[in-house]
Amino acid sequence: VYKRQMLSNPAELDPERSGDPFLSENFSFREFIKSDTAAGMSGGMAAQRGEGLHYVNNMRHICRNILEPIRAQIKVMFGEESSVRISSGFRSVKVAKEIAGDHGSNKSQHRFGQAADFSIRGAGGNANMTKLWKWICDNRNNTDVFPAGIGSAILEKVSRSTPNRVTHIHVSM
View 1 (cartoon, rainbow, N blue to C red):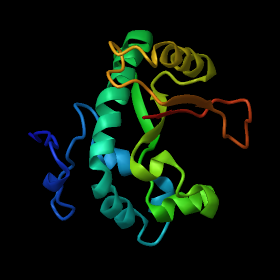
View 2: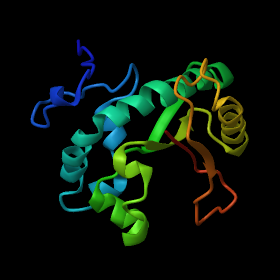
View 3: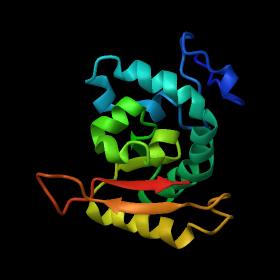
View 4: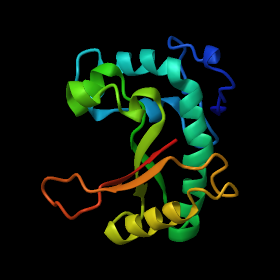
C-alpha cells in the first residue's frame, strides 16, 4: 500500500526519488506541475520538476489554503464523486513562454506556483462551473473558508471551438 509522503519543507523533495509527494491532503507535487504543454516539449517536464522545486512552499500554500476548501465545497455542491482537476498549476520559464509569450511569462503567478487553473471532475458544465465560481467569489475573504483569502478568482472561457464554454476557474494567492 502506497503511503502518502507529505512535504514539510522543500528540501525533502528529491527529484531523483520515485514516488509522488503530496503538497496537501489531496494534491500531489506531480499533479501541480503536470502540463500537456510541457509534455510536448523537449525537456519540458524536467524543467517543470526542476524549477518547481524552488516554489514548493507556494504550491503547498495554494493547495492547502485554496484548493482543499474548494475540493470540499465541490463535494458538498455536486456529490462525493466530484473533485478538482488541476489543468495548470506551476509553469516553468519554458512552459510560461510557450503559453504566454515573452511578455507574460515572468508576470504569471503560475511561474511562481501561486496560481492554479482547474475544472470540476465529474460535474463540469457551464452552470456548475459558474455556480462554484460565484461561491468562491462570495467567500474569497472569508477566513473560515479560505484561511489566507484568495487573491483572484476568474471564470475563464478559452475554448476556440466553443467560445461560450467555461473551460476552467483560475485562482491565485
